[in-house]
Image 1: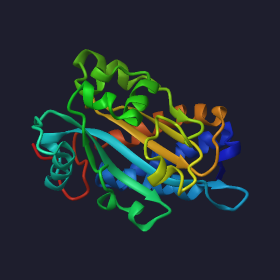
Image 2: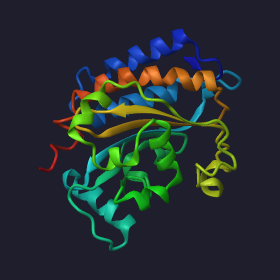
Image 3: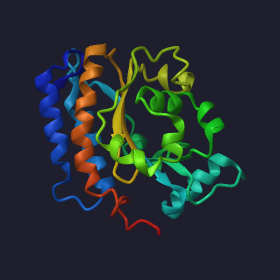
Length: 247
């Protein structure tokens, strides 16, 4: 168990090693992602209650619209409400989720977050949490929309910064205040991730019920390097649990 309010370097190392090994025996990136979010949800605890410190843990990756499963393509089109989308459009896709509510434990239970089409700069600039995640990772928005081949290798080796909102209540970066932050008493939001060999971005986002100190948030950027190794196993092969990518 890890005390999220007093997360140490030893905790960081143990957590990173545990997540690194979660590709063993897995058959898809989705399966690895599910193992990871469940591990983080169950092992990051609030010592005052002995219960999970996170209300919700989610794993996202960008994925081309044309390679999504049919149900995810439908979810992406529902967000666009008739606006055309190209096969190459990157979609921020929910691969795995774990949390306090039953519907937060399956990606199929998510409303509006299963596949978010990143159609252009304007769309991202009107999505404050996505914009902040990209910028705090140290990326240019265009790099996520259309990663240049020459940059992918350099970015793959980069240890990214974390996406960190120390106090979610009232934050402009976390828009769902009335629906989510207030009723579920979200304290901080912490995201960590990086770039995969395919040029797609991945991110694990923790919505915590406690306030996470800056020094704890900083440690998670090192955890992301180990996560990247594990999920990269399936980056160009099986991403979704129910079959191969649509080509």
